[in-house]
Length: 410
Ligand SMILES: [Zn+2]
Image 1 (cartoon, rainbow, N blue to C red):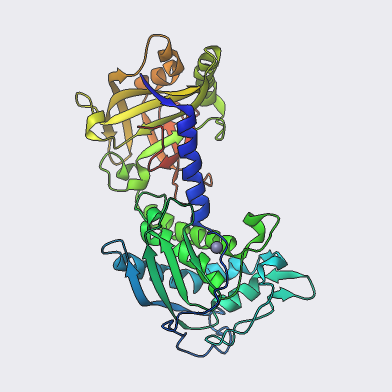
Image 2: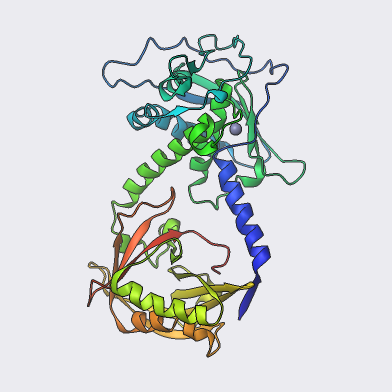
């Protein structure tokens, strides 16, 4: 049996959450007394206005000076700059941001003209509404067609949750290296692009201020979320060009590794839920909370027992997490149709008592044939949603969320 300290796990979860939260935000920046003389100034005059053809403005971000403690990071930074340019120049971005307005406290208390970008709006608040209109933010973000940003990736001197910093008018974005690791829900260029978009809001004069609700009221948080959503919409379109089952078992897309269900947050329905509730009741009668179940379609080598290629796991908690691993061989019945069956190989971590927590689901999975399709259920950015369906009785199905990893899954 594998046991994990619940408190330790909670801390790791909290850290992971905080990291993500900060990733689309950052700590409050401060206007610096002086700006770096080497800052590269936007090289063109502002556009006349939205073009008649598309009604959208265009911006191309380029790297000015560059320094990084992460080796070979420049191609990632260049890819991120291109993604950011593409998103901010898109019709989707304009259409989205025009629907928003933000708290007046996004405007700096004493705005002064930016000598390097004189056309930026100094007064951001609409006097008629007392709010910062999305259209005003759009105008500032796309004021110049070509924007050079000086990028620095630095090693933080001590452990920190701060992802980066930037200042009004400086055109320099400094990022901490600790979080720039390719293990997040989005690709590393996407994650860095979201971060740069957030920081660029500070560069053109939007600060965190003192908003009652950062999620809905803060310009930089809001723009980070919009960028993430648009990037994910584009990625998902690419992923869906192939049928979901074509990604399974061969590890051809890391986003589709683990299909998981947390019943508390992802309520199931119908005949499948009737079966799931039996396992949940068994866990509850043992004074344990049922955390989640999952299929790992690409387990590491040490979790492939005697020809198994899939792990079915169940996690419950009561002071500490308990994790059960069941090893299965998943065989295609029809690769084109995407139908498959499971053959039980072995279990790790269970006693006769704890086997009750997965008894009914295992019985279902070992007896029936299944297929998977994309779900129309909306999931968080970076996550593919799927329906897992019993072929013999399609009324037995659940929806799940694919995850790259989870702290208690492995
Ligand atoms: Zn920030």
